[in-house]
Amino acid sequence: MLETPGPHRLKAKSPRPADLLYQQRLKDQATAEDTLAQQTSEKHHEKPNDPNQHLVEVFKQLTRVMKDSNTSDATDPSPFSGSDEKWDEFYAQLRTYLAAKNWLTTFEHPHGPGTPGFDNEINRKIYNKLLMLCEAGHAVTYVKKAAEFDGHGAGRQLLLRYDGFSKQRQKSLKKTIEQLRHVNGTN
Image (cartoon, rainbow, N blue to C red):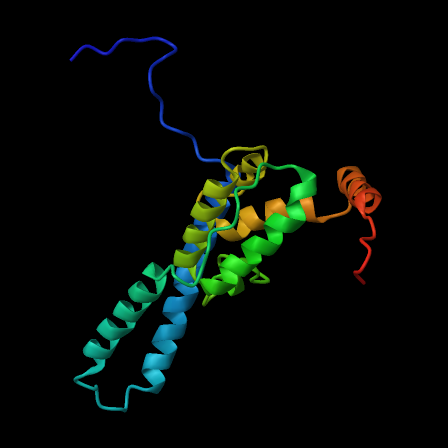
């Protein structure tokens, strides 16, 4: 097969520093978790192996799959375009959604990936959800600043941009205050 040279030839995507750091954190976390597992297995080595332990592990995995596929308790948040005045509403909906899916602890984890016990599977799901919710606006730029498949990092990028005090936030709060009107018969 003849290969055609030129500027349009497909080249492999070079990894970004954030992606490399994220992959290294995942490796470090796996190493730390393996070390902890070995230490606990050495401590409990005297106990006889339970013949039903494999069955228990299968049921744990089945329960996890059923919990992840159950969407009756969680409604997707509205898509976020990236406008400052919609951030507070979106963030409240997002937190409610994450809490309903039991993903909020992963999203708000103080250290994120690389920490033993951090759930990387849920982290990837959070990244997917944020990417889908922000795909139609400017907010997707901040999601993509994080390492690929790092939902914790993508959430931090969004919070850095939208949750802090800024001139845009000041304008949106001022606009909200100006639009407040008292309705007779209400508190």
